[in-house]
Length: 143
Image (cartoon, rainbow, N blue to C red):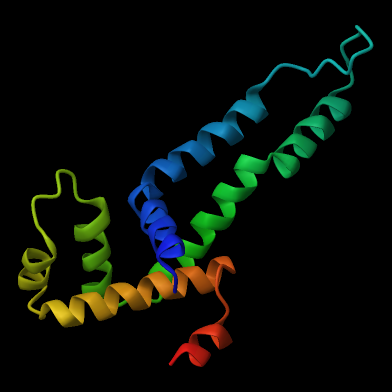
């Protein structure tokens, strides 16, 4: 996996919890928004028109779509992790303030650093595959 993709996925993991909040805020903002002016100068009074326009905005909002895809991919991978690997993600990316380096995280998890790096790379790769950033067959061809 190239460094750019790895850095992107690590960034998405770091901001995962904020992304979930952003997703809900965007959804709520669209749902709670006032009726949309369609350019005619007349606001629609029809409830079904307003609901339809809001649904279309929910479906077509690019940021919302990207956040949903990213969160879904991360959730899919996280759901498959055992407790220790999940703790690795929490300690590496979500703990604030993060006072431990990789050696400290490995010590807390009772594993060596090589294992930590192997697990981390495997998790990042699984997320990359889930996001469609790399294909499974590309990785097999590299080894």
